[in-house]
Amino acid sequence: MKKIILTIMAFAAFGTANAQDIKFGVKAGANFSNFTGDADVDGRTGFYIGGLADFTVSEKFHVQPEVLYSMEGGKDAELDFVRIPIMAKYYVMDGLNLQAGPMLGFKIGGEDGLDEATKSLDYGLGFGAAYELPIGVFFDLRYNLGLANISDNDMFDLGTTAFQVGLGYRF
Image (cartoon, rainbow, N blue to C red; front, side, top):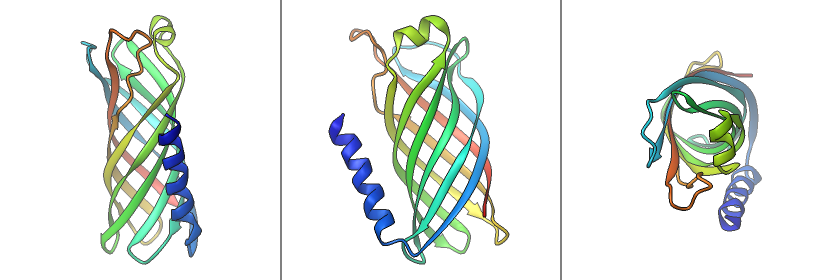
């Protein structure tokens, strides 16, 4: 766990050390999430909302850390997280970028029984794409894959997964 956190911090420090320009923004959208592993529940539709900082490293490469409130889990098995993804963005053409990067998730609540049976820290990877208009508005799609077993019971495997569709604005 310590190695993962140190890797994320090093990635963020490297990406921002050479940054030439910083823009801030907000984003929100829909989450279509579920659990992986031993859970057998229907998916949950929720939302996410938060802020971001976009660090320009070069014309084609940016680093974008975010802080998001995210409603996840499954139907009747709800968990809420504060997610901190750090996305590397590569612009394949004007306005269109591909994204990938690590994320940390801190559980902040959920259904009573599930909240007590799950760990408070999740980590994983995010993959996505976004299209940005010249006026600062952007549309994004992202898939988040949790890599941690968040179950407190070592005999039970429980992971997270979510597909996000969102809209944002960079100042």
